[in-house]
Image (cartoon, rainbow, N blue to C red; front, side, top):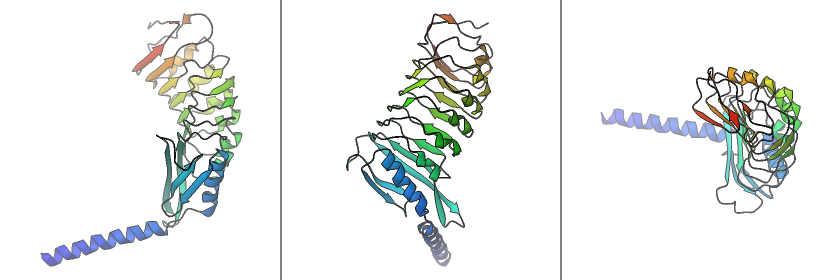
Length: 268
């Protein structure tokens, strides 16, 4: 029995060593490392250090010591080319008070799926270059972004999560956003949009969460919003214009959280 136990331990040890060696041999392409540095520079970072072997950002920000609560994360997948090549799939730079711009260089990370640049001081608007990405998750809430939402954003049909809240975006929501048929969360609270919520919102059949309080939009709410059968959280308030009737809710049986203001609500 002792011999069997020793053999088993040796097997586990050998397997672990092989796995660690395999991970150590996996590398992020230099062009993606360069792209990460370009991205952080565009966002206003003065300090930057990246550990290629661990695929980890070790230092980033406008000061050597990050602000309290700041979060950075780089997720890499390393199963490419027989586990010898890694690619960045997620990038989080959250709460660093970065004062720059949203980086068009995201297109240099072809496997990137998620970005979270919330709680910074980023200005400018969303780069139209992002249209060629395969992003599924975009969060840029609580920044200083402004201008119109580029129509090209509607080309990112892989998007399931889009949070633009607490910025200074303005203008009309482009009709091309109706192409985001996989969208599950849409948050545009606390902005300066104008116009109404377009009726193409009915295209978002997968939508589960819709938040647009204090967005600057006007009523009325399109009646076909009641066709969003998967919606379980709805928050609409402070629309410009007079008090109005809210669309019938009888088809929206999945609603769990409902917050509306300045509406007359009828169930039937």
